[in-house]
Image 1: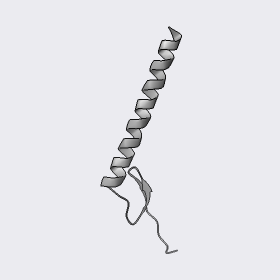
Image 2: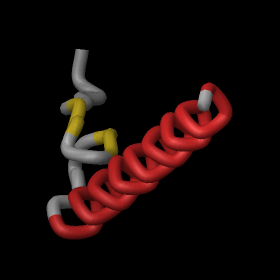
Image 3: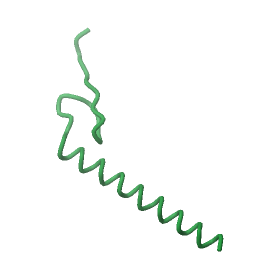
Image 4: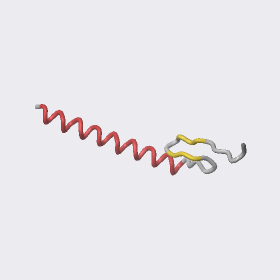
Length: 50
């Protein structure tokens, strides 16, 4: 029974990681941070001026 639960947990974690990666990739390609640095919707503005 424990092995069955472990497999279910591993598969669930793998699917969630895959979906999170796909979401970050999709967001990065549809909403790029052109003047900024970042990915996955987490854009950080940068400035070369002091």
